[in-house]
Picture 1 (tube, one colour):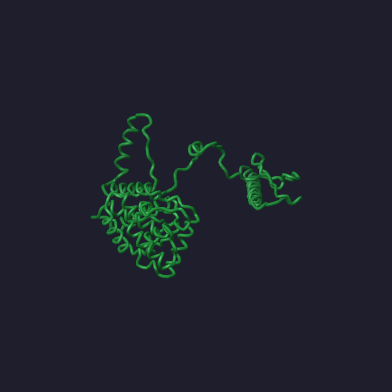
Picture 2 (cartoon, rainbow, N blue to C red):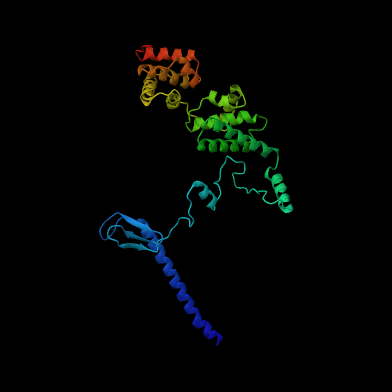
Length: 325
């Protein structure tokens, strides 16, 4: 008798399961179809209204219901500002190479001063930084972040510099060398790789070591990591220097034009790109009636007035530019 009941009940359960699967399948098909709907099939209007309260799409002109049982993939909560959005979000910050543990560890807050929580906090402080190597690693990443902030570098440069430091540390290239020198050289190297114009003098100004040590560490990393860096072009520095000198886009375009003509005649060979850029901006500003002194250009570009004067004379003579001071 029990066996007979089991046989009678089992088909009903199977039927219900099939009905649920069919309903789920129809929902998926309708959800997929709703994404492809671009216009009303009745009147051809493109003013479609997606009503997530009723889970349907209807035409705003003729009122035809085009799709039903729409799936709302957004959150079920509402946020009216960025603070509410960050508090109600259920996910943490994304993984980043700028933090020694990639931002994946969990930190315990003090909260109530319970004895168990205090012990947990102490153990976390002991295990969070395991040894002196990790402590040095944290210091190096903080140095990269500090110098990047001072140089106003974008986030991708900071991530690239942190990844490059991890690679150098994995190959044991940091041992016996100054952390400040290595981090400064890595930051300068990342700027060169991604085409972000920052001079060695600018990196030196925000670093804790001298330019000679940065240059030595830079050449060491290029050799040991077998990296190829494209030589910097004077054109890369023109937009930022013009912005710092408060010069317009017409002067910027003229300076780039002068640099391209100089490159065609091979006048830039063996010359520093920053000096060529500074002299071109100086000439372009004079030609457009917005004169900037050589001292002003020198302060912004970090090139001496003597270098600007020499490059200015070379370019104006070789390119037949009549500059009236």
